Length: 256
Image 1 (tube, helix red, strand yellow):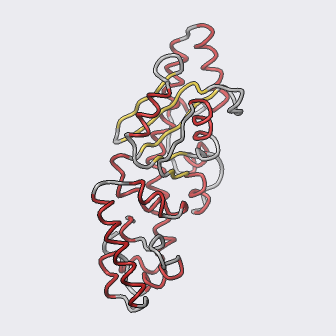
Image 2 (cartoon, one colour; image 1 turned 30 degrees about the vertical axis):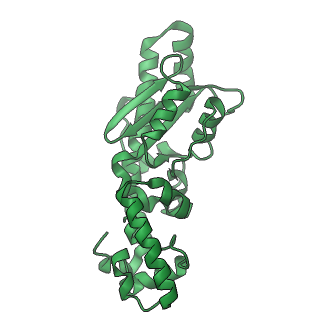
Image 3 (cartoon, one colour; image 1 turned 180 degrees about the horizontal axis):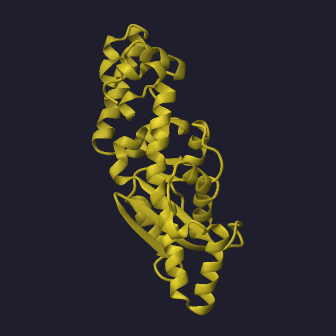
């Protein structure tokens, strides 16, 4: 599903009206003129707004859609901005952003992984650069944990539209934490299967106290897997959401 199939961010069109439009084969912005479910005044306003949306989409301005599209519908933007979506995950020394430190931040964008490490290249400037280069950001429980942790510790104000897969997974019946959901979906972590958040803290302590490079390498690999696996999970969840949202309209949604 793409943002062009979405109407619930257009002024005067809510989710109920969007469902009516889809039910009557108006499943793309291009089909709006054929609809008789909007008054001519509403249709004209919608047409003007969609024209503005097309221009912003053409130049890749995700910020326009981030301000207009309801948070729970951000996932519909994924296909449009997939080349610059940043899947990200952080590791820390604990759960309290006021007392604990960020140790590593992994970002997976356009098929390339990079991990910033505390004491090396994990700086406010580098984080700003990474988020600036990204359109949408994707995390698992990042709205409650990763983003606030980074903002507090590095004086950031992250403005990217943020897709938090934890909430979307619940919508499609996938419960539990990220590792459990990965197992349920058959996603294999190989020799890192038994590493979790607690072990990540221990790995960092071994590196910090004993300069254990093997521990750091394992931590970085674990953190990168957390970020990289989010892409596969995003695509699985998106397919399920498409079926849930479009329901019987799928057969007529040729532009999906």
